[in-house]
Image (cartoon, rainbow, N blue to C red; front, side, top):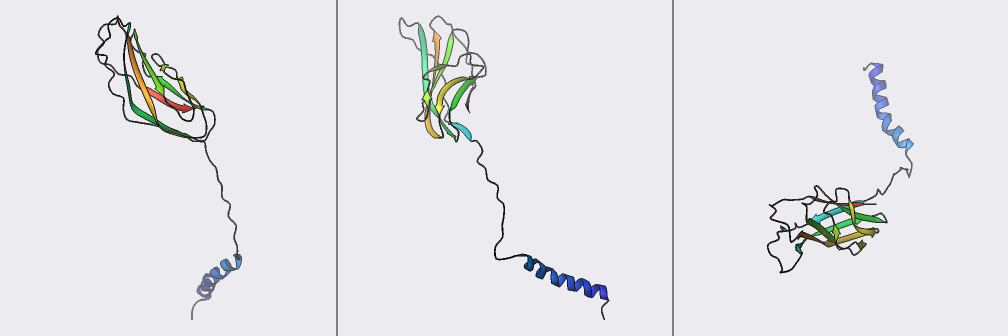
Length: 163
């Protein structure tokens, strides 16, 4: 014969599933929390080529070269967004770096001088909800004709989708 404590334990174990079934019905309720967070995404594809000034037109005061081998795509679920650009170091004296971002969802500010844009400058404004895919980025590097040789240098341009 089994001791009473083992029989009681066994009876309790056999009744637990019945108690659990007794507490459930033909429907149950769950609480589900939902939220859509602000989305601001921007990406670039392709890389601009080297912007080397190697030739000049006679009588020209400004020498320049352009490149449009890169694109950007953006997506947001917010209204009144903009894309701003900044540069990691100012351009050398007598030179300028300009950029233009095309946009089908906002207003491009055309060619914007980012030569000394240590603080962000607006390049596209009035962006609404949605996406703007594979839009062209054009860079133009210009130098005064009086500038002497400048050795190879580089700059980092940062694009930010913001409000």
